[in-house]
Amino acid sequence: MQIETFFSVSQQTAFFLLSVVLGAAMGVVYDIFRVFRILFPPAAKSKHAAFQDVLFWLIYGFCMFCYSTAVCSGSLRFFMFFGSLAGFALYIVTVGNLIVGTLRRIAETVRRILQKVYSVLFEPIVKTLKNLCQKVRRFFVRIYKKSRKTERSAKKLLPKTIGLVYNKYAKLGSSVIRRKVGGDRGERG
Image 1 (spheres, rainbow, N blue to C red):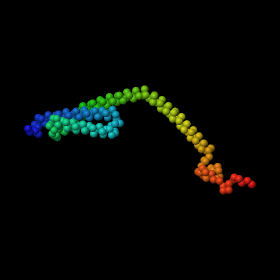
Image 2: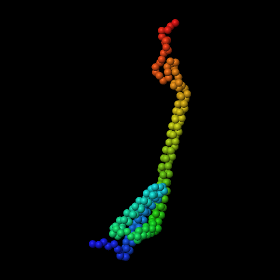
Image 3: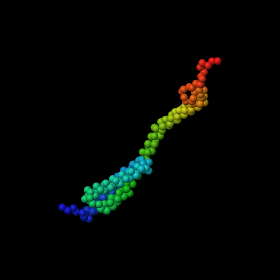
Image 4: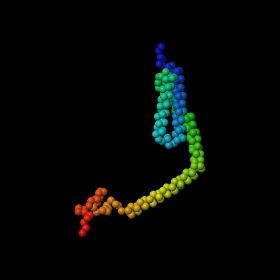
């Protein structure tokens, strides 16, 4: 049994059209990533966007591999890549722009509605909590300043005991008191 490696023109045309459909399907997958970027704009300008791009191309490569294995007996042909890129481009330029434009308007409307809900429901609560936190902060700062003032005045009142010697026979830092030679005891005159 011999494997046929050449395809007829009609088979190649069918493979090309199927690869155009595959490219359009990959356009749908790319639109899903574009929707995430519309809904979460900060993610579009960060490492998340790069991760999404790499993930998309991995999915694209895997789909091309599965397509070539399942449909074309594992052979890769230039027209398959060209057809899938053409289908992708056609989808993005036509239907993709309509879908993304519509989703952009919907996302902007939802964003405006959420901002109004936030300003009516949550903004007064946030302002109240902010004012409360400022008052509590002022209270603790006042207590801290008073404690620092008390600490400084206490340091002024108490002399440092390290340099004071209350017994002229004691050495600094020793607990043994030495007596004079000849001593004070018993010498009465």
